[in-house]
Length: 191
Image 1 (cartoon, helix red, strand yellow):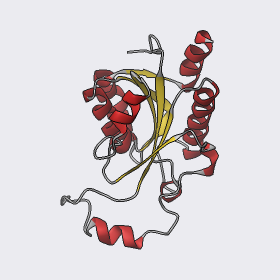
Image 2 (tube, rainbow, N blue to C red):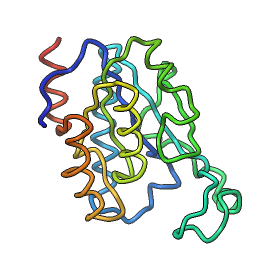
Image 3 (spheres, one colour):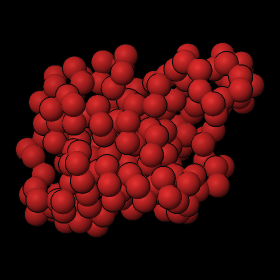
Image 4 (cartoon, helix red, strand yellow):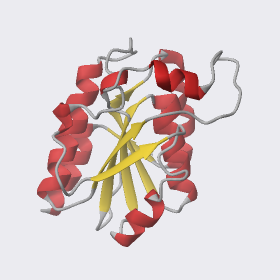
């Protein structure tokens, strides 16, 4: 469903745009995802709207076929700056910072309560990976009762098929999809 409106207090959630993931081979240019996320962050900040910067520092402890080592082993093998947010996002003192150890930004982080304290009723989500961190965050936001907007040109995945499945099959069930330009136009129309 295309973006119909922005609520009075939407928040932007940028998922996992961090140094350790910047070198991934992705389906869409990573720099474009970062650029569009930055444009949205600047627009939200200019209007005094919350910006949430999310990084991942670990993983859930459950076994999975993909992981042959434990999350603790994987964490110790990462470079020291692996979880640092990308400088291009222009982190500001008023940004809400969330460090997660699962795919989604809500589980165990207090994000839902923080957004509610800021009177947020809608979230715009960007980041990587579309089918993992972004989709998990969108699912949880939807389950917490937030209106969800997914900025489809401000996200990517390591797998084009997974990205396409999320954007065409899952996201329309969770909220509305829009491009960065469409979201910026809605923000401009409110000014």
